Amino acid sequence: MEQKPRWAEMCARILQQCEVLRGGRNNLANYLQVNPDELADWVEARSGPPRRVFEKAMEVILAEHDRRAAMAPPPRRRKTDH
Image 1 (tube, one colour):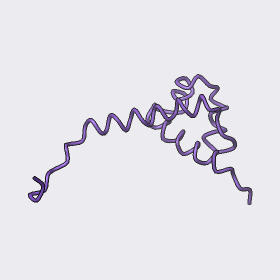
Image 2 (spheres, helix red, strand yellow; image 1 turned 180 degrees about the vertical axis):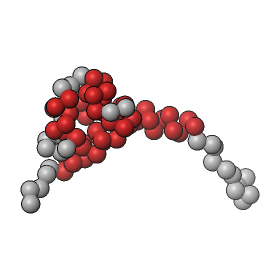
Image 3 (cartoon, one colour; image 1 turned 90 degrees about the horizontal axis):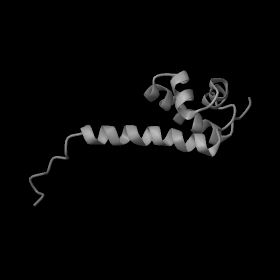
Image 4 (cartoon, helix red, strand yellow; image 1 turned 45 degrees about the vertical axis):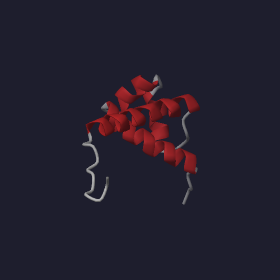
């Protein structure tokens, strides 16, 4: 069994989430300004993406986190909190 580098696996998971958030592989490839075939290699953890691509993908994840946080109701206070 071939072991994939952990970096490539971590990046693949991030890129898979980005695919969903950006509406598919082609849309994500356009957003990242990369060839879809190259993106496929990274999504399948055959290799890790360049740092520029990784950072741009993280921006997608962080923007979604911020969007969800803005929609969440404020935490409820307990009666014991003063």
